[in-house]
Image 1 (cartoon, helix red, strand yellow):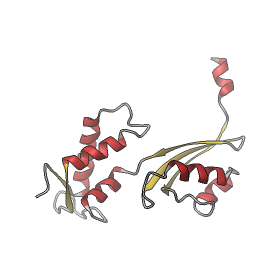
Image 2 (cartoon, helix red, strand yellow):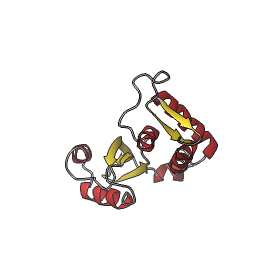
Image 3 (tube, rainbow, N blue to C red):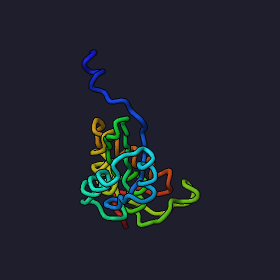
Image 4 (cartoon, one colour):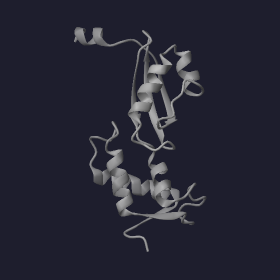
Amino acid sequence: MAAAKELRKPVMATVRLTINATQAKPGPPVGAILGQLKLNLMAFCKDFNARTQKYSIDTPMSVSLIAYKDQTFDYVIKSPTVSWFLKKAAGIDSASTRPGHIVASSVTLKHVYEIANIKKEDPGCKHLEVESICKSIIGTAKSMGIKVVKELE
């Protein structure tokens, strides 16, 4: 047990960022936040941009970064939010202003399943079954005023 404590680095800060895929730059907002922590901006930007190349440029990626006191860092990149995926699949810019009363658009069960498979890769969802992720996505769609249908008419 004592050996495990020695391996842990003292944490300086935990930061959550949303950065578009392949768009990390040393300037604001990334530079301002990581610069205050005296982290290597160029190393983060190059690594982040390389790891997000498979996504389109306008894809917002969630990043959880842990900065250590020795100026090193670790970070995890998560896929975009379910609401972002649903809006893209439904072809809308914003959700319904009155969910449950006004339907903004609709998506198919196939869209839901594809989103679930993408979200399954996120660190927090690896242990979940695709079916439970689908149920969660359907709930999110309902709260956004997006109707889930078997097939589009």
